[in-house]
Image (cartoon, rainbow, N blue to C red; front, side, top):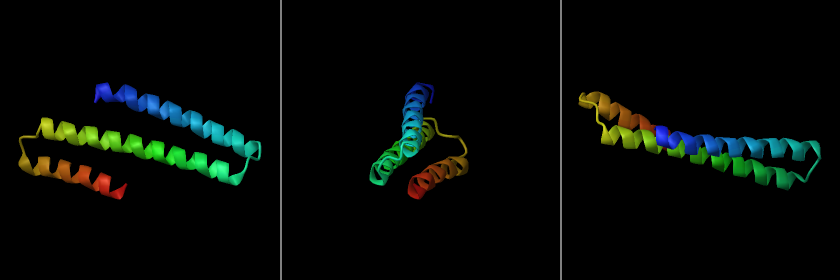
Length: 86
């Protein structure tokens, strides 16, 4: 996942900046609708990062299968459950 890590870190840094911006908006008593819009953007960003991580793990699981088919199936099922819960 090393190649993916940089992309994830960059996305999380961007999200961190968005959260700081939201805090500033609240301190400055900006309109509620504007704060909610930004919160929604942060939620979407986090959902995207979660999707990237799950997809990368699933891809790795399929490209590098575990010799134990039971363990392999459990890993795939775990990835599916993470996607479904999202």
